[in-house]
Amino acid sequence: MDLFDEKGADGSSRAAAAGGVVYSPLAERVRPSSLDEVVGQEDLLGPGRPLRVLIETDQVPSMIFWGPPGTGKTTLARVIAASTRSEFFQLNAVSAGVKDVRLVLERASQIRRQGARRSILFIDEIHRFNKAQQDALLHSVEEGLITLIGATTENPSFEVIAPLLSRTRVYVLKPLSAEELEKILDRALGSDPVMRLQRIVVQDRDVLLRLSGGDARALLNGLETASRLAPADAEGGHVITRKELEEAFQRKALAYDKDGEQHYNIISAFIKSMRGSDPDAAVYWLARMLDAGEDPLFIARRMVILASEDIGNADPYAITLATACFTAVNVIGMPEARIVLSQSAIYLASCPKSNAAYMAIEAALEDARNGPEAAVPLHLRNAPTGLMANLGYGREYRYSHDFTGHFVEQQYLPDELKDRLYYRPTQNGREQTIRDRLNAWWKTRQR
Image (tube, one colour):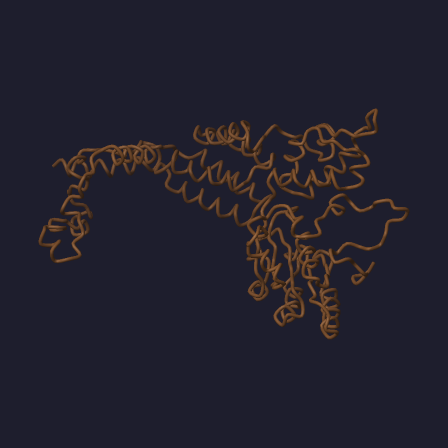
């Protein structure tokens, strides 16, 4: 079939399979054909949410869907075409070139001259189009000849040229949750005639959901392969067990439940390994989480916390690195994010440790919550009005930069807490320097 073979509104071929035999994969057979059938992406498609409103009011702009595989980018493009009764063209950036783009644009121009419906051009993996190929789309997108929908797993800020990016809206699609994957699984088992005919039963659902890693296509492809591997029972049905699923995915299903005990046990082991300065153990538990499909941003967030709670000023750079790690993971996504997580976990595990900053705020919070509501000393108060200045606000305040070493002895805590010591720096790493400096200032105060 060439580029312009007749297709249905949802983009699927109308050619019937010979003899009624189904050749298309399960993921294609159960692909949603309407908005109400789409599972997931509630932030965009829930009632009253922005993208749903645009689709329902037939005001669809050119857009780019950015998200990991199997989150519904292609499905959503086809549903939009069907919902808005648009002519639908699909190209894959891996195999298509400028010539293919121009053929679509010529056909779209013919359709417009005939006064027919809108033309939607869906380009899968648009990040693989080079600059010349993307440039070829600019004029047609700007004048509205086509409504462009691009799909990418890469950050469009880096992979799509600025002029094209400025003419489109970017919508971020998230990995599907276990609950959303289970809805898709139930639909496939209940609505697909092949699954029903074979009387497929999935015995180890949690294994299938875990191996799918938030990817609906992986779930359905794995289910279909496992159904072919599962032997028929005495009644002609097929029961899919852990064994068939691991063979289908060619992976061992590690015990890990994102909402259960193993989730908390493994993240605990990961944090305690870094706190205990064992980079090898930290990387192992990191690998366990990533292989089981844990959200990399969840891991990165925990590392930011550890950098402050368990390293603190022993290595002030740790919090900078951990925050940069979170940003990088958010920008590049998996699978490359595993390298950033590994580098950061190794560094944090190898840092000198101190929980002095954590202990300081806990002790200060205890006094703030349960101690007296101490007044701010007069010399530290602000005096924005003449009356306040006359009352002595800020009168005896001593400006540190006017003194040698930019330090002057002065009381900053309220009278009731003036001798309180919250921060007790350790002798580890950079905190030793801080300790020495504070000790020197303390001696000046004593003198």
